[in-house]
Amino acid sequence: MVIETLTFRLAAGTGRDDFVAADKAWQNELIPNRGGYLRRTTACSDDGLWLVTTLWATPADAEAFRATAEASDQVRRFFSLIDGSSVDRRIFTTLD
Image (cartoon, rainbow, N blue to C red; front, top):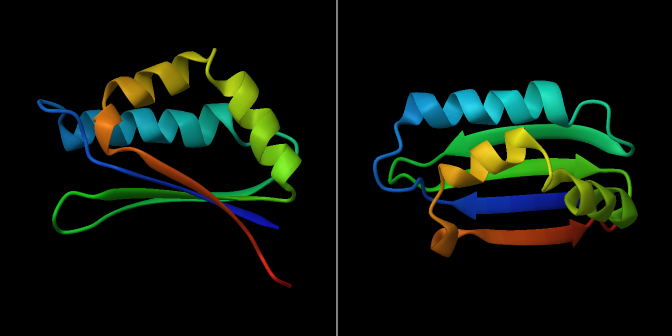
């Protein structure tokens, strides 16, 4: 199994409600029918750092989604609301 993490801060002027709506569109419209997708959740720390964690069956599933997702309206909207300089994406492979 693969755990993909994305941490970031919202772009200046982005309201929490606007971001949450964009995140829900990604979660409910974009990702549910992708091959190898298992689960996704979003969280925010008290100091405004956001974390999106997505579980994939294989590294290839995560990369296949990433390769095609950039063309979607949901992904463009999501990334327009975050500070690109704060983005940190990591891929972890579980040991079990």
